[in-house]
Length: 315
Image 1 (tube, one colour):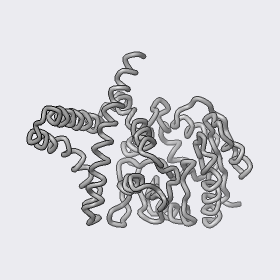
Image 2 (cartoon, rainbow, N blue to C red):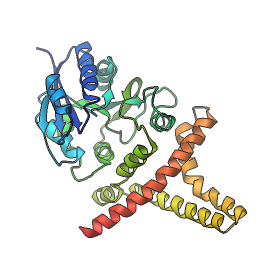
Image 3 (tube, rainbow, N blue to C red):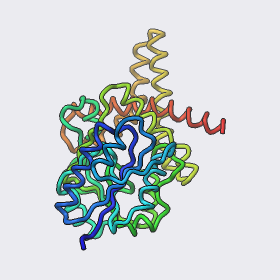
Image 4 (cartoon, one colour):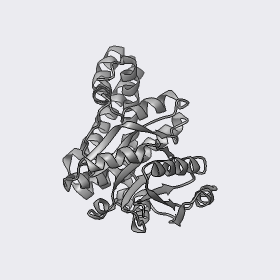
């Protein structure tokens, strides 16, 4: 009897991508000699994604009005496989995903993920933003936490913890990874093979909306784990926004030299993030593009921070 892998896929309105995701993961399971169980956890989609998932062999679990961490936990709770994977519904894994992943697990990792790239037709800002999370050296990495477009582990590893935080609207991947890190679980992000993220941002407005959503859980995450480093990024957002506003005020008053001086501290955090994520690529143009995106991200992060603080007071 073949060993089984359960692949949990949270989904909301992914009619455009779900068939590709299931087909690619199915090929990867076949190449690895695994029996596969697909569990698509649908959050009340209004398109035909649930029908397509069922038609392509997935077990569809309807879980309306649940956050993404709860969706993943619901799928894991009914999983029957010895191995457990979490895929986003817009991820195309390479055919050797599970062969490489299981090999890494056998060599001592507890959880593995693949680097994700964007298809070539994605706009420049989506390509630059996705590339920042990929290995700069072509070597595997062992971070304290990993994003969840694709994760692979033994089911016993998942069951040893408390699962994904169901109260976070975003950032549940970071909370999950930090929990694993505290439990001394070894996380490995493989530089090769590479998965493709088909749900890339197609417009600036979509990029801003997604970043606003991603930055919306810093306060809640800090309340859950109370680690000062979790406040680092919100504080940098406030720093960047404050100096950026001072630059704008100086320009409105016709003080060009003052605006130029204030632009330095306004851009320092973004420049440092960009340098850390691009210094080994040897591409100044890419570093500059990334700095601009980080600067915008911090402005969006400040807005998300104030919204989360206001929402918390209302509750």
